[in-house]
Length: 566
Image (tube, rainbow, N blue to C red; front, side):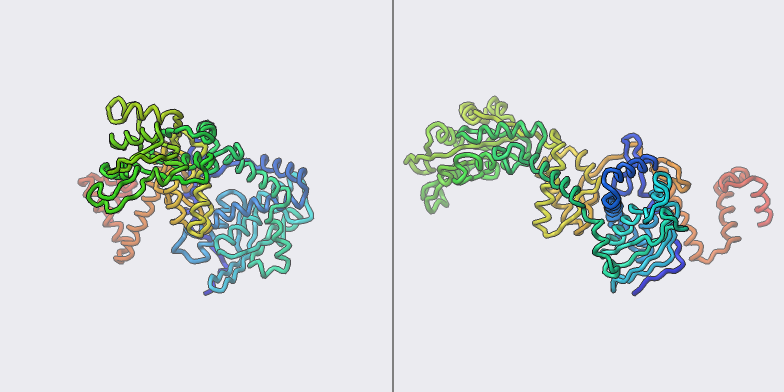
C-alpha cells in the first residue's frame, strides 16, 4: 500500500519536544537517550571555515555530510519506535520535525510517497532558514554548488534508518549558490544514476581511516598495555587495575602460591587463568574448584581422591582434582569454605608435595601450583578459628587484591565494549551499542556484583535490542535516580519549566482530552455541558457565587448572568 501526501501537515510535535530535557545542574541536555549540546552559529561557522581551509572543499563536504548522516541514523532509529500507531508518513515526518526542533532548518514538504511493501519512496521538500546557508553567506558568500551538506547527510541517514533501506537525498536548488530557495529530492539509492559516485561522500577518506586505525591500535594497546607480559584475558587500563596486573605478571613466572582477594564477580578466576596461561605450566591442566559449591563431607574426596570402599557410594577408586592437575595449576575459589580436614590435607600438599586419597594410606606425589581466592578477610577467619593459621601463611605468600568495579570506573567503557563483542558473536546480531543515557546509568551504578553483573546486564541488553538499534536504559535493569536532580523540559511556548510541571501539564492535557471525548461520546451539547459545569461548581462552592466563579475561572457578574439565563 502506498501512502501519499501532496498537501502535507505535520503531526503534533509534543511527542518530540517532550524528549528534550535539561539537567542544568549536571551540565547536560538530552534528546531522548542521546546527550546533546547547544552551540552558537558563529562557533559552527568558524569551525566550518577552519575545516575547509585544512581539508579542502571535497573532503570538508564529505566530513560534514557524514556528520549529518550519523545524526540522522540515530534519529531514524528513534522515529521507528516513537510513533508505533501512526501512519508510515506521520512516522517518517518525525525526521523533518526533529530537524526543525534542533533549530537546523524549517522543512516545507511538497510531496511524499512511501510504500513499505514495494520499497517505493519519493519526497520533495523546501528548506527554509537553513543554518548552513546562513553560515555560507556570512563566511564565504555565494558558492557554485549547494552548501547544505549536514542537512543532506541528515536526510540520507534519517531516511535510510527510518525506512530500513538505502535512501539518497540531493539538493537540486540552494540559496547558498544563488537559487531562490533550497529544494531537495529523496528516493532509493538505485534510482539515482550516479548513486555510487555520490555515496563516496559517506565513506571516510584515507585521512579519516588512518586516524580511526590509529585509534583502534591505541584501544588495543590499552587493553594489552604491556605487550606479551600483560594478562591478555584481562580488560582494563585504570591505574588501580594496571597495578594488579603488574603484580600478577611478576608472580606468573614463578611457582609461588598466589592468594587473590576481591568481592564476588571482580574476576578472580579470570586473573587465575591469566596467571596459569603466562606461567611455565601453561601447557598443563588448569583446574578450578569452587570450594563453597561442594558439600563438606565430599570436599576431601573431590580434591584429593578416594579409594574404592572408603565410604558408602565409593564403588571405585578415582583421582581427585590435585592428581588430575599434576604438573599444572589448581585454583581454589572460596578457599575459606574448606573443612578442617581438607585444610590439613591442602597444607600437606603445599609443604610436602604429597597427598593421600580418602580411605588409602599410600602417599602419592603431586607437582601442583596452588592459586586461591576469597572474598572474606582470611586473617579474621584465622582469629575466629575457622581457618588454619599455618595454611594462611602458606597461601598468603603473594597476596593480590583485585579492586571492585566501582573503584575502577574508567574501565567500564572498555568492559562494555568487550561484552558487546562477546554477546554480538554469541547471538549473531549487531546492536549500535549503548545510548548515552544507558552509558551514563552504567557509569553511575555501584555494581555490587562487579564485572559478572555488568556482563549479565550487557547480555540482557543485547538480547532485548534489535539489530542496528541502540541499547537503551529500558533494556538494562539499572537506572538513574533523578528525583533530586534539577531536570527541566520545554513548555508549549518553548520556555524551560521543571520536568515535573511539564509532566503534570501533559497529564492535564491528556485528562481534558479524555473528558472531552466522553462528552462527545454521550452526545452532550455545549449548553448542557455549560449547565453541568455551573451546577457542579455551585454545589462544590455550597451556593457561594463568588467562590463558584473562581472555580470556573470567571468573574462573578459573568457567572451570575449565566445562572439567571439557566
